[in-house]
Amino acid sequence: MNISIDYTKREPIYEQIVREVEKQITLGILTPETQIPSVRTLAYDLGVNPNTVKKAYDVLEENGLIISKSTKGTFISENINKAKEKKIEELLEQINNTVKELENYGLTKEEIIKRMK
Image (tube, rainbow, N blue to C red):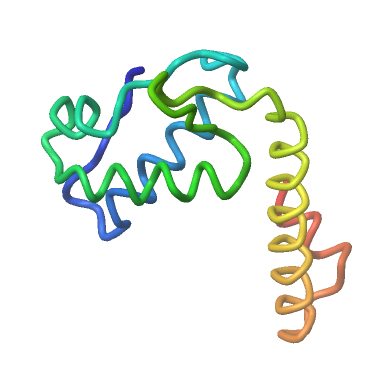
């Protein structure tokens, strides 16, 4: 698993790990039932504290993207399509909130769409 971390960003490292794994799942690089590195292995590879990777894995598991199987390891979930749909809904909600905020500043939906293009 190839994860890029930018240590100069203000974004927490665990969030960067989550985003990178989500991206690799979306792109089909990580597929259902693919085993991912252990917390210790990934922490060593990235040069970060194992607690940071554990926190990222906890978020990914909570979001239904990975599953831990005792004594066997951590794997990409078979339910990634459901998790993808959940993420899409979250992102659409963010867009809706942003559109509402822009409308509060006096922009029409047409103006917003025009500026987005």
